Amino acid sequence: MIRRSIITYINKKAHHAVFHYISTDSSSSMIPSSPLPPQDSLTLNRLNHKDWLAPNEVLKIIKALKDPSSVITLLDRYAKRKDYKPNEVLYTLVINKFVQANMFDAVEDVMQRIRAQEHSCQLSDEFFYNVIKIYGNVAGRISKAIDTLFDMPKYNCWPTVKTFNFVLNLLVSAKLFEVVHEVYMGAPKLGIEVDACCLNILIKGLCECGKLEAAFHVLDEFPKQKCKPNVRTFSTLMHALCERGKVDEAFGLFERMEKEGIFPDTITFNILIAGLRKEGRVEEGKELLERMKHKGCYPNSGSYQEVLYGLLYSEKFVEAKEFTGGMISEGLSPSFVSYKLMVRGLCKKNLLGDVDWVLKQMVRQGFIPKRGMWKRILRSMFPGKNRCSSSISYEEIVGN
Image 1: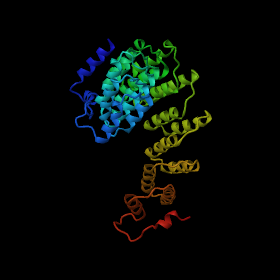
Image 2 (image 1 turned 180 degrees about the horizontal axis):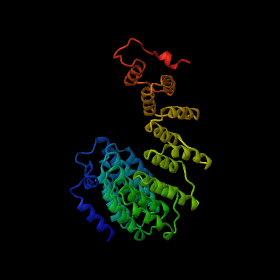
Image 3 (image 1 turned 60 degrees about the horizontal axis):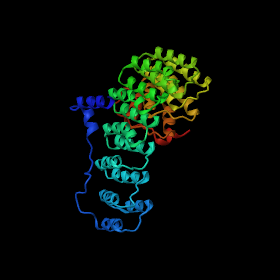
Image 4 (image 1 turned 90 degrees about the vertical axis):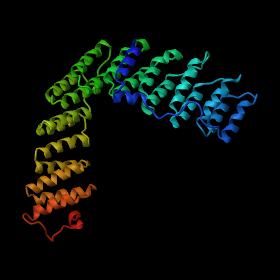
């Protein structure tokens, strides 16, 4: 059984940080531990009247309550009335009240109340999606997020692939890779038809845990699941290959993608340019930057920045300065680190005219040279001297 194996996995992690993340929170108690505030007591007295209460009037009462714990008393009293008719809007409002107060046990109590009712209102997938999101992103109760997903049919509601994929992505983000596979295997029981997004999440998880071969097996699953891989599928795999120094294999995957009629985007090119930069293949990175434009994919600041870093790390400082000029003419601003490395390299080569140009551009871009940079410049201007009375004014830097 899927859920049993998930619980078994979590139990094995009982003495590790992962389990600590899943099982702990700072929630309040479900039952109010102190008397109701006087104002809330007066508000709740409206439930003691025999007059018929429309659902909208109940919502107004809930909104008027100051203490979230008072909502529990309201639910108890409202359930005893003949006009008791809760709906999704009411449950959503109640849950949001509890979440704002970090009363996550109370959220679980509400879900149990709904399930225990014989004639409960019909709840939508969107309602469960929000509850799962609360458990996973706010409460840190990932096991409850999984439980809620698999419990949805018991509430007479079947999850959409959007909700299913959210849980998968939640598990990948929490690095619970073994659980990702278990939940994925439960898709048929939930009536889920696996889509490209679902398979992409699996590939992302496998790449992040270093199981690259398994990730490529998932790529082969696309046609079997009647799905078509997209640019995100290939970009994820290319990124994993580049991170492991397999840049040529990443380019092979790039060619395969193009043959299959999938157009690369800026992210795809940036991944490859970054891979080339890490390998010291700067010229190839520059060529790929130009190739982007011919492919109708306009590079962004990240594309240029990767090439610039490649030039700087290869100590091609004059070329980096010229490339920086091109970036600025395109309306792009190099990073502060780029300027810092450029000044350091140009000073080392005693190219003070180029340093002057870099400083002016740096200031125009809104960066302020720090003391360490000035010391390096002055040492380059006055080699062999520890102190000097000369200085360069701000006006001299920014002046024409």
